[in-house]
Structures are given as structure tokens and as C-alpha cells.
Length: 136
Image (cartoon, rainbow, N blue to C red; front, side, top):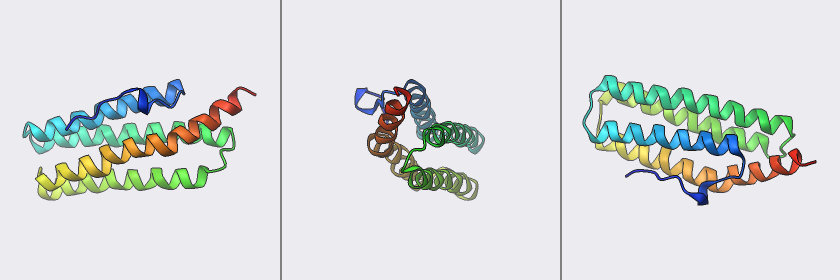
């Protein structure tokens, strides 16, 4: 299953939207690597990229939240920490078990689906607040 970026996922904040598109590309790359039965090394590279890009994106998003004193920052940060932990756990699972159907399901459910829901609910709310503050 590929994740497709469309207008329903746009937050209206250019940096955030561009980075979300990169995250979708990373997730899709990881899923393709799994589907094509690539070796552990290729999967590890895909997961490592997803992990490092996630850290970069969350840092920049949280920097915006702190700059504009986003009132839900502590909660939002907890979501991010949980997601980073999920990606770390997937990396560990890959090392232990290799590519399994369970790993692919985990990627879809706890990475891809999580990101879609997080963008639609949390990030849109946060981006609207940031844009409002930037306009002042």
C-alpha cells in the first residue's frame, strides 16, 4: 500500500508540508523495499533514513512550536517521541527477525497510518496556530 500526498494533508505551512511529503516518500520507499524482498541491509538503510528524517522534521516542527509558544506543545512533543520510539522498535525488530509480514503491517499501521492521522489532526491544528502567530 502506497501513501499518497494530497490536498487533504496540506497544513498550509510550506516547510511542514514539504517535509511531510518527504516523510511519505521515505515510508513508501521502506514499504517498496519490504515488498520487493530486498535484504536486511537495504531495509536498514530505509529505516535509518526514515529515522533521521523524522528526527530532523520533528526538531524543526517543535522549534516553530516553541518560537510561537504553541499551547499544546507538550502534548504534541509526546506524540513525536512515541513515533520516534516506534521507528526505533521497528529497526530493532528488523535486526532480530528480518522482513516479516508483521513488520510490514507495523510499518503501515504504526508509521504510515499514524502519520496520516497525526497530520490531519495534530499538525493541521498546530500549523493554523503558527500561521496565525506569524501573521501578527
